[in-house]
Length: 262
Image (tube, rainbow, N blue to C red; front, side):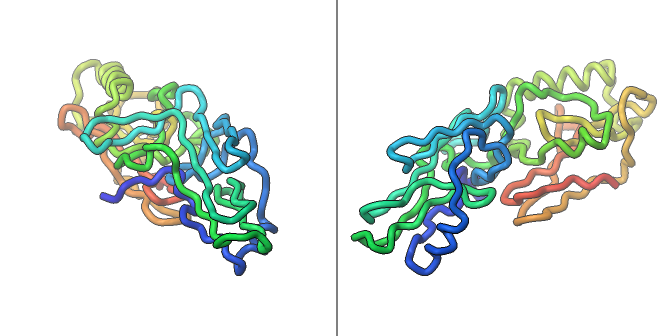
């Protein structure tokens, strides 16, 4: 599977003379709260704080309390991060700062009159880009039933793969507690129904007993995943002790991933 590249938006962006006029027109300051801005493979949640250093050439961000970016490192172990950074480098005598371009992060153009190559490029300056199967997890959210359409619309679809989630202790503890409580230690997929839940900040479907009344029921014919912008948005199953107990849509490289309930 492809690697998840964190904060690689506009990485290697060439600030040559040709696009410099458009870059200057779109240039905006980096907000203190990066909520809603695409940071590589995920859109920053509200409360993601940004700090500029090195005269504006380096952006360091910190996720809100409870959020972690989780993935599998080179050694096969779970890696989690609560912060990351992005930097712009060039050989021109001025310019090349980290800027906001619409809903993305990039680099400013070099001054056309400056000396040097007039090429400026952006790249991550941390180790997050090296992890695989990564995604964002709101550890504070846990697993809870969704009761309204408005709440459902607010949920994300950028979780890590199940390969990552099954290595996270807080996820496994919450999953076991949820299954034990709704099934009363008598899990039977043949007599279940699907309901929508908030699964650590993302939309998901979970299996509950057919007579369970404390949840919004969904048709059990299946789940489809639709990518509105970009590419990716793949279906994944959630397992407990080898039994399929849930379903999620994982965004991957998709900027707007939707879970479609049939």
